[in-house]
Length: 65
Image (cartoon, rainbow, N blue to C red; front, top):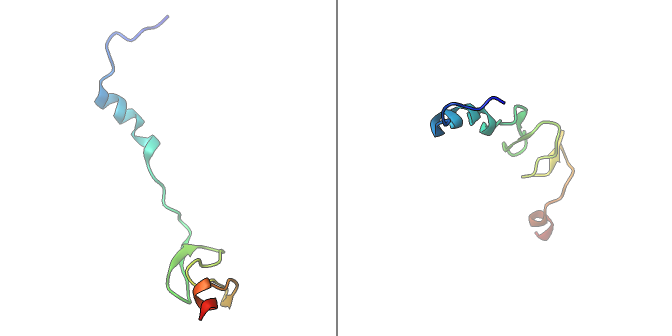
């Protein structure tokens, strides 16, 4: 059975594993036309509750006023 001749250094080990921990940003972020907040495309805006120019979700702040 093959056995490594030398111990793998911490730097070499971490260099090999560096691609595992890369964070990926969502590529389909769009700006909401109502409030200007960034959100995922084809989703209701969490900040204002609008989708395609129509209010879909009424927020608690607006309902209390």
